[in-house]
Length: 303
Length: 303
Image (tube, rainbow over the protein chains, first blue to last red):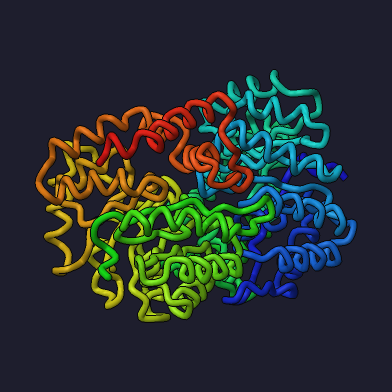
């Protein structure tokens, strides 16, 4: 299984108010992904609230997900932590449990220098031979990986992929091409930020790390497969039809919208970890309307 | 003892690479502060690396500090955490141990809304009657408290102070006056960012939350007392003489400089929690030269 290609869906991690994960609800979410034939699962990503869960809960969640998914899709799991020693232990846990890869973000409180982030990655990478994806998410970590830092990290043997924020459409191809020229052959350049992803795929991104794909995998696969088949008109048509959802993502964050969406579909009754709050009733109603439309009409509209 | 007035010093928290705190070295740092007659101690602030330590270590550190300091100075302790339930437990720990106050920052990974931060503070504040200082530190939390949010929080009975980043000199008085007009009488408005603090004190800040004051309390007290006595010329003279240190703070962060300083003075052999790294040898030499000058010549220059 090649993890760093195609559509990788990032589900929420349903948990109670004490941070105890509901592995049954998680299995229901994962079944939607494997039933759709998704290319990979991003477990305990940012939408999966990894920094809010204890190491023990993260291990229990990973074990449960691996048991639920079996060989139907590879699982990449978030191994980021505020302390380097914690991230090392999480990488070892991921390897021991049988994850296909680890997703490593430079979680920070004291703002980090490039040199510190490089040393952190080196220490975590050398702790196991787990394949590692660089998680470049300035919106949560407040650290931005320069192309040159990604290049230096790509020289570590098991650092094999990067998850970048998608660039705006007009810059996507030039930035991807420039980055690819710096990196070894086979190094995967994937992107996130669903509302800019159709253009990022058209520009040549290897993988789509998708929040929406963690709940509506068939829909996102339609876009991804259309681009792969060269049908950019169809990909853009579907993307444009999703504008009401992208607007909600931008207004409230994709994480808050996904909690409301999962609840609106009756899959579980989950709330994000406080201090993050559920959307208010009016916003929940807007999300519910959009996602019930996707769910009910999906078969007609996307197939 | 009135905690939210005058000079509050924030020492580093010496710890080993596993996050085990060296309470003996901490006691040596605290003795410098109480010997100087400091107005208060900011234990486990950002410079004290609170988010990098477990709840158990934070409690052990607080107990040791309270035992070392006794009634010589009140202790405010950092109670911030990524999860609301963790911050609630830390507030209860602080109250049970006997801290004079808690310093509460909205630690985040998912960026927080104003509404979420208000609800977080309300939940933590109502868990005990511990006096709470709002910790407004956008550089680490990536959340900025608006004057109106501080006003709303000041209506919670035990939220009694704010620690703001100091404004640039030209804006300091207008911003302090505008904020004070919104807040109840007696609510303390203190500031941090040592290199802008002399002007903040002259502009009327109630308290100086000081990193340098966590190692050189006499020096900082000279500035603070000079301003309190109306001698702004003397305060500015001392402040100007510290420019080489302020430059180091701005270039490397005050936390990294303080680790190098404590080591250069031979107080302990401490390193910040990884991924944060000690300064390189050249920068350490620069810090050593400056702080040894302060230590050796302090009696002549500042008294």
